[in-house]
Length: 363
Image (cartoon, rainbow, N blue to C red; front, side, top):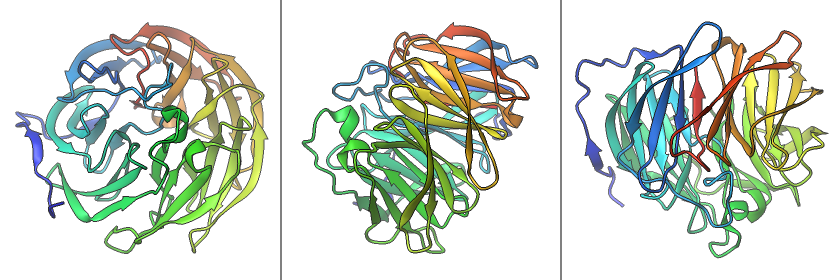
């Protein structure tokens, strides 16, 4: 692998200067015939109006065995606030698309090789970006943001060592890559392929250790997570259908501090909305709400029904509205987040060509 992988595609940005996202929701279709990002304008009352559709220049992908969640991952569409960029994975063509963002508008800047097969998740901290590739045993590939583009770094590629032949793919591939809150560690969930958290220590330049510290959580199927403070994460566990508070220690080991069951089926995704957290339960088509305190203690708030196949979700700035993809029919459900954490339904959209799609960000 060369020190810098050349872009597969680069586009001019026209008059856009990357002023950043606001009053918008972006949804990825993951369509195998041609991946797209569909843009919605968010009104002050949370209602959505579809404004445009943007080709990524790549293809969506479908993991074997998947129904509502073809990527079986969290973080497949990721916003980089510092650089006003949106990163979209093209799992079917092994690339990542970089868009410049201005309000609810996008301009495609680049399509670059993901450094592996079937990219499913992107994480960003400062100028460092990491892409999680799901197939061939899993891998991470590191990039650096330079002048609004990604530059691939050969010294930031690491293999995860999962069984490349394990089936079904959608349960035995890695689920998410993400940073701890302080940016010192990179965390990868392995789902049923490893039932583990693989934690890479990062040096000051953002380069990962040669190998991760692996903490096994037997039968938990760790899937998605959000950071909580500098060292903790709130993690969904599809095995027991629970949300767990996990401490990532300085040596890379992980300790589960607490867990609360949702009582639902296929608890896989989680989103922060102010002081609340919402887990998506694909098998029961519900959202499980939790109040979270500064120590990561979770108080259940009950379940809210959605369209069929609840998958990825995102909250607007301030956490006042929650937007949820429902993968069976390619739906997008909108909710107002009330002061007690309960959710009020605002309506639902059908995202064109997005059945089984994942990837959403909101502002």
